[in-house]
Length: 280
Ligand code: SAM
Image (cartoon, rainbow, N blue to C red):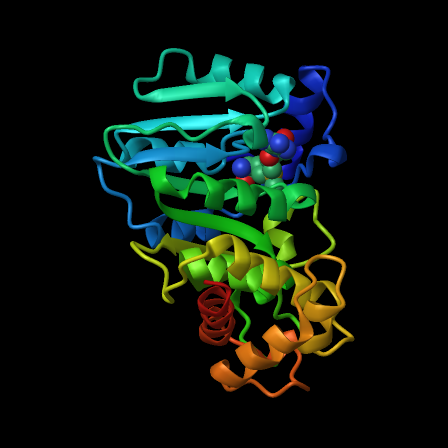
């Protein structure tokens, strides 16, 4: 792991610059790094995907503890530095790619994903991983504190929304440790949280029509100021017949004045099931 002085030297020696556009904040705290990797519970048989290895602060600690590491880095200059440092290292593949364009492959066992995420695309990366969840066992990521709060929050909280519901439907999220902004160089403007998202074997609620389930959640949060009822019958995303909706609210035991931010996954599922059964 490099200190700020070494990072500056390495970057300028290679005629590069620290690319803010790519969310480049490099981890410089070895104690924190070691704690993070120990929290990942690495096994020698693990297949790991690292998102945005940068100058290799996490890579050097992940590599000895797993059987294969695929590191996806968008910045070609950093890829060249990493490749010349690691040369023929066994078990390591460094790919110059955009993670959002990388379909996670089905390997001999499910992949463990690890990364200090580039903050400008945190949510797109999480949604990309959720889409590829069949090939993933667990995700260990550093995200900005406010994103972590959105992921972990419960109904009634102002941070609660589509990100919370999507992640909690597919994964069990857990805060592992705080990462103060001073652990990075250059120092970012906000503190971060290291999280684990364990992919669930099956969702915590049963819904027969997932498309409808996600659509009603989206509609509810699209019009936060409206009641959930109005967002569903007069919304831009979905427009459900008023009488049908009244019946479905009644079956689900929902008050027509309730707002989407007060509903948990079970309640959304209940309404989605009621609508599906009335549509039959
Ligand atoms: N892992 C390194 C560390 O902890 O020091 C760097 C972390 S830095 C917060 C994020 C890294 O993601 C940068 O190296 C950046 O170039 C890379 N990156 C940015 N956008 C990316 C993308 N779309 N796909 C893959 N890597 C990306």
